[in-house]
Length: 302
Image (cartoon, rainbow, N blue to C red):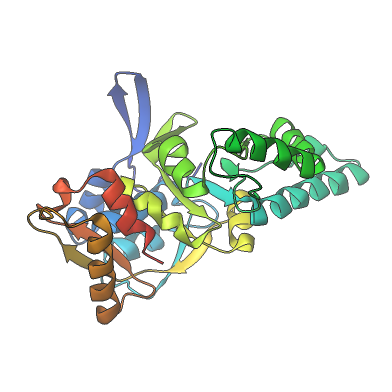
């Protein structure tokens, strides 16, 4: 844990007991500018920097720079998300790498059990699943059985990995696609680690990881190497983004679907130019959108 150069670590009593957190209110008193006027997405990233300030990757100056946003747009940022979600095409090689590292550690006389993901990693098996039967009530069961028959060795390896590694879990096939599983089962909103509460944030190995933003959880897709680096406790280096505000008012009229809204929003954003930028939705119309509708919009972010 970092050494808290801003003195922002404080305690909070909740219905589930006492936790600690890093207070943006305290930071606001220590830096120039108004932290609470920043976009919500920037505040989430600022909390991450604040929590890790004084450690190996984040300095006091890094926190002060992001707090001065938008002046800091384009500068480098060492972002440390709270968790990682992987699909099987990229996740299986990552676990193979960890297993190889354990073998190498054992070969030099070290403790192989010290090789573990340093942040929670969930591997969702969905991309490689084949469909042999459809259109019947028995199709799901049949396809699942065939999947385990075809890929028995791979699933035995992943089961071993789930038992051997700390901070690693596997979501089996026939459960759902990665984005649905992430939204409905893996997302927590708030993560508590070592008694410290923090916003749920993540990177994933699929471009449509952005779907999780419909729930207010900050996340997006990265490459397999970047995700594996985060798994091993390394930051994801990125440029401080520009944030585009998108105001929603009123409600969808009868007969207009979320897909219609998504296509309209996508057209407007493409015309504006938002590549490499964050888009933050606000306005009274936002509260009139259901979570599935928000997730549909967020899913189109790539």
